[in-house]
Image (cartoon, rainbow, N blue to C red):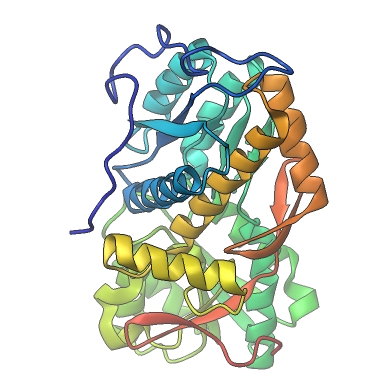
Length: 385
């Protein structure tokens, strides 16, 4: 089990009333005022349920960043603290937590990573102009106003790198299996259909499943029966390992691409059957992004005794992004914090994910092609197939 830094809280976790808390700390800041001694943030996380693995890694990345930020005195004598609420990857629970957070008027909220819960949270926080940072949450309906930011490059922007890899393998027909009820996965399947001509393949079958569906054998059988030359897995977490195993059992030997949910150890359950699966990630350990990336990997491994995921890396970068904006703002006023976030994103910065900018709330950075080999995701030697 991972060693976890003790969470710093100012109210009981899930189920408590957050509206009674003065979110700015000992004294809530106002525009132009100095930062309070304790800056209390809040995060709604998918720490259990379908996206639980993502939420747990997010919390680890956030906690590590806060520990470093406080130790380095980045915010002078002010310290960051954070409270978490677990929505269990349930949109109704996420909306309830967002309503409580909106009433508490935090300097900044970090939202849940699943697109299904993010779209439940975003409208509530947007209505009160609450500065909010999401990681992952790639579906539409998240970036609703200038107070909302997504610090994960969109998978729909990255997946063309995987399509180019398929083209280098001379794939002419592509089969897709996707979580049709999960906005990001459905969007990736649509992107493949839109990009057919550009990358020289034709989508000849798309099999839709549910994000909570554990038995996908019938859909895999239908997919293979069309004899595609390549297959795209637009699935969530452990469904990827199930698909890899069942494709191997069905005798499929062609190129397979996936999305980020295939990483972070998710494919381990498929053993050697998953070897060779490729996807376009924003980061994996070993990505040559400089000292920020390597230092993060070392610190994470020391803290949690495991390799970091890209989810943890994104959350780590997002927390530093927030801290630098708070320093720039010199205030916990939502308007001042938001102005500083916009300024920082426009200027660009270097984080674990490398050089990044944020335009209209959306982060942009360079993708890295990775391949699953013998229990690990490793950067492909040829990044320009």
